[in-house]
Image 1 (spheres, rainbow, N blue to C red):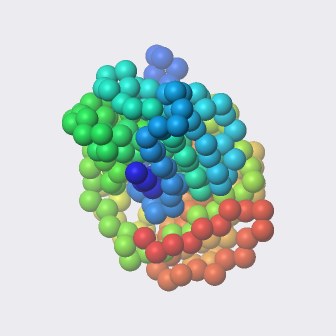
Image 2 (cartoon, helix red, strand yellow; image 1 turned 120 degrees about the vertical axis):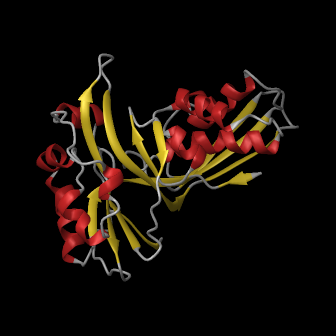
Length: 271
């Protein structure tokens, strides 16, 4: 059994207030994109171990027990009878990019095991389990365009069709610390809801839809801000950093031709 956990982008991100628990409430629109990992789980009949984990592609620099796929497996195993498994993750979504790749792996693991072993867990239960794995994980249970509030865990479906656009996704070899990114933010309630703003023509988004992290991140890492500028120069209808970075995406009406350094992760696809 195999599935393909996909990435997401943030269309706009407003940090609206700091919570008493130290986290921040935000407002964003999550949109799934077809950049995917591959996740396989099969019964392990060759070993007495409860699970065996392996990976390929982009290096996964964590102990197996700390991998989100294993955490998802253990969460379900605490409630349902599950067999020993061999689990393999082929990693294609860059880490530290604001694309939710790890969150997707965990959520897809929940859905995969629920379906394959006929656990009959309801969507509400899967959403609750996903919330234990991370703030973005719940989005990937439904995996469709969503308006997110709270810490990104309160979701509302939105109608958003970008199938007429190409996406260009660029990630430079820069790691942006999320805590550092938040330290550069002054939380401010937004004057217009993103649910209204995304109804505007995409070409108008650049005047109205912003990512609050860009100001502080671009100041510290000018290379990331330069990518956004170059996407607009290449003809993007809209460009934005995803999450707290470091990836930047552009939406184009025609397939763009980009000349990025070889060390940059560059991915272009029709949505």
